[in-house]
Length: 113
Length: 110
Image 1 (cartoon, rainbow over the protein chains, first blue to last red):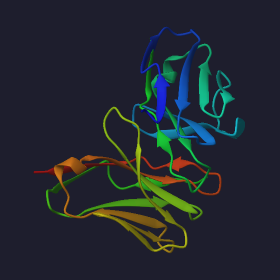
Image 2: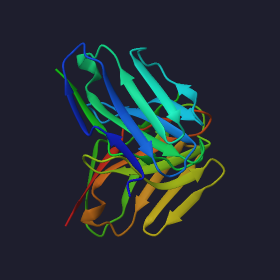
Image 3: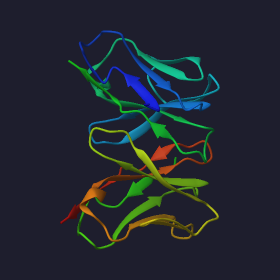
Image 4: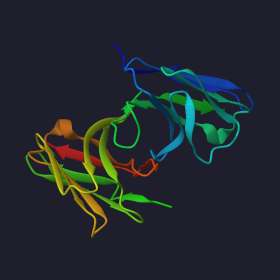
């Protein structure tokens, strides 16, 4: 049983396309996150949702839009993809915020050509 | 803004020795500082959490210390094994900040 799953695992696409990455957690957690890990392996928070409400929205281009249809899912839509969007995107979840352990998905490797 | 800095990009040690990894923060003391392990091609995995008012936490061969005077947390792995080779990340999760350090890659030689 995978606790936090992401699809797809790999995504290769052309500049200018629109793509989505899906995330699901079966842990019953209230909070979900999206992180971006760049080529230097630096992990940076993008968004966080608590009970389907956006609570963290870092400085991210508005081409990126998260959507949380329910507490178990947090999807990431990216419009007009650019070369610099190439990275690994990790979804994570936690029971609450701050003090809680975060459980990470396996990552989605996005390559924009 | 808060910066979380970890020592050197890679740390090489011999099997059986104690590995010590450093995490320094620049501004406010994190209310919670977490340590994660990341293996190549995988997501980070939680190891330990230490609160601002705690000095030390232990779990099996792992120990974390927190020194608010030095603005530093140290992460120790005793009796290190080749299986401990991975990247270790410290993570400020307090005060609505979610800031990862750049990570330290640990290589344990047999």
